[in-house]
Length: 266
Image 1: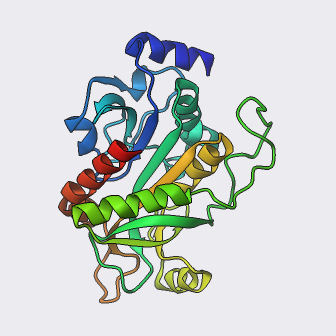
Image 2: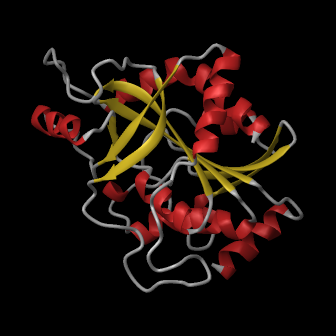
């Protein structure tokens, strides 16, 4: 951690980010529009390189409406073969750099049958079905306590702020529970029916590990999903990553406006 942080401080100088944003599939364009300093993951000690198409794999530092922000332009996933410790390491680095609030974004399949592709859903809670937990292992007491409370991972004040920002922009926002599976295969129809019975509204392959670690590190967390597709096709049409990217591309202008407005008012 010390080596990573020292390297990044050498790149960013006196820049101290207060807000972190993890940009999911198809949402990396925000970091292209707001970019003062960009550092490739491959250059950063102890970072791993993203292998997913559409994820550039950079830490981008920028001033957005007077707020100092660091963005992960592409995340790493458990299904890529990385460990939980590796994929959540950037969250701990953000904390060490000064971040207080973390905004998590992703593309997710709809479990709630009233949701439509391109809808934006504020995450109110999550269900971890990834079969493991990023906090397993020796605890670092300098980062957080051994048994962190999970009652309010996604902060109510940030959820309210996102709703208010959506209203001011004329954006209709959904709210719901995000369920995380490991992937990389999409869910079967039976698994979607199970997720619906468990109370999930959307399903994906990320976000939950970062949210757990951010909560553990005492960061204020906000999560927003872009609904990219029905989680399991009802008409027999095969699901694809291309469909996910195409839908998030349709929604990205709205999504970017919302994130910028939230950052402005954080």
